[in-house]
Image (tube, rainbow, N blue to C red):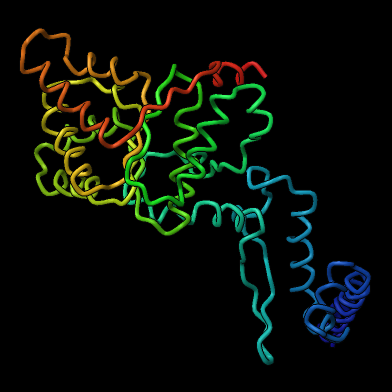
Amino acid sequence: MKKIIFNAEINDELSKEKKALCKQLLLNQKIQKFLRTYKLSESFVYENTYLLNDYQKRISLCDDCAGLAYCKQEVNGYILSIQIQSNDVEKILVPCHYLQQLDSSIAHQNQLIFNHMSADQLQYRFSLIDIANETVENPSYARIATILKEYISKHDPKSFFICGKPGVGKTYLACCYINEVAKKGIKCGFVHVPTLIADLKTLMYDNAAFKKVIYNLRRVDVLILDDIGGESASTWSRDDILLPLLNDRMENRRKTLFTSNFNFDEIEEFYRLKSKAINDKIGANRLVERMKSLADEKVLKGNNRRVENSSN
């Protein structure tokens, strides 16, 4: 009999706790919003007290959240939601609006057959550039940004060779361009040339993988060759990799955009490999002639933005 009384006392205490918790939940704005959203009565709170208490605690962690870097949830970027179907009540995790924005901003990467961009670079957009301010501060940057933005919708296969000193914003503009192209569902690629050459060296004994990379670079509708002339040049990289690639893209009229620290004259000198041999002179000339056929030179002037940003 004592055990029965003891259990009755515990059950009574738990019942009181549950009723008190129900009253608190019914006063909670998040729970009130939940009930209105799903057109539920207050009885739902009594029937699912502890589930709703867990729900309101976990979504409260998102109050005043400043972004994914500050997420307090157990699974970064996911919040608890309650799914109601017929008489079944189920807890599920759904992406928060910050994660949804991130997913939306990088969804285009499925169109990037070849990609050397970082996660940050995948989010670069022309819309983030203050053209009006750039027109005053750096007319060259504003002009080339506008040209590239307008070029996205054009069918002209001849593209641009953007050259200038390190840090003036060449790669940023190239990333903006290729991201916008990819968002249109166009198969494209962004290649950092020094990384490409280094990677291909490691694939020299894997013929299938090597051929796949070259095939993809030749076939994508739009290709950016970033920092060309920044690699460790050799007759192999010049004559066996870059020349056949550019020749194929030229013959098939596929858009190819370049960025480089060198202009056309300087990059031809670079690909002569500091050699006076006639073969190196001809090899350099053949390569640069393909570049000129594929792209018009655009000189980007301005200060080093990396230095300016690091000092702010």
